[in-house]
Image 1: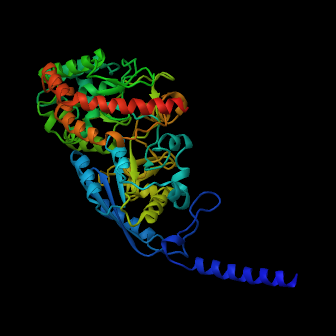
Image 2 (image 1 turned 90 degrees about the vertical axis):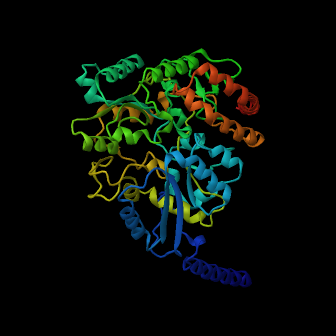
Image 3 (image 1 turned 60 degrees about the vertical axis):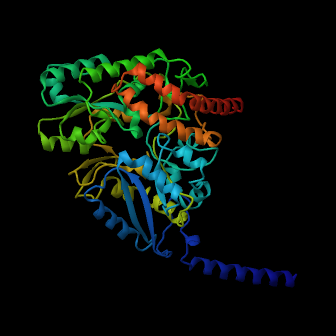
Length: 519
């Protein structure tokens, strides 16, 4: 008995010494763990070795970004000890630049990706590290800041391959419309697509030097092309939606929530064709900008006061756009017009988020990358990275709203840290926009898509997808913005791409059938 007690005492001493030794370390493996309430434990005693994280995200570098980074690094200096090397990639170059970066094996620690970009292709290629274990160990704030329904719907083959960045279960879709011009022309608030066209033609007739409409003409943003954008509106009663294989293209699509994949090359959908023909008419009537395919950023022209209508994702008008427009003309103002069906259950959702931040498999700092994002998911730090330096770039309005003070730090939290728990609403938004944001955040307002939780594994057709998307880039935005004669170009497009699309469709349908059979 004494022998057992003695051994137990020795073992206790050994364990205590080991524990004390572990607590005194300064390596990645001794990073702070989560406290019982799910927040990061105090880090004062665990200063880590210095690390520079290289992060690649879309957009233009804000003027005051360096000051924000300096403040963030100052806050992390005694604990995480992280420096930030953030690379901003222009939207027009995003697909190619991120593709080349990942395929070359360049050391990147965090990178933006999306279902509409190439996240499924990159996952299939092994470009990204699975994050489940890393999040459990280093990301308590990341996990708790997103509802379980969001996590469940945004896994890939059952794994977390990117952190979903979003605050709603459906992406807001609007047109930015020049309210001041609409009112000057005596046109009532826009309620329908026909109302929108009435305004566009009035602008053409009565407002010189103003382009009535500038849809997106770049392949990377083809979902914002004129004909494609139409599928979000209430007249799309069949719920025609891009397929999980080609997430922004209507060539392969689903409808009626029936679990089937349809192919425009097999049989043209009359409604889609009517959208394409309408876009052609708008282009020929000089409603759509004549150089739409050459414009890399429609938002910039909107800020310069050169566009009466542009399509945009997210409800409301972004503050930086509004402020920039007013700097050109103090009387100018955009309003956000949505034509979505807001009736309860009318809109399908698969709850898939529009933006992700992933950790490339080649990163040498995977743990620290997740620790940084967890730090950024704490309210005070989120406020800094989302809105800039308080008192200089923005001011708080209550606990859940903000007001930008200038255009030195533009809004882009969607690219790396966006979440519903710490996000603030723009206090300058009208009450309708705030209500729409609340509507989108409640999953009970939507009908759940049969394919919610399904992710397409494109390994079997990765080459076909690569070939197909290269061909599609030559035709899709040109046709869906009305720049070319649709019958002629559709025939050419079909001749080149139909066999590839069929292979992708068949593989996708097989996976969907397996998924539905297992439910």
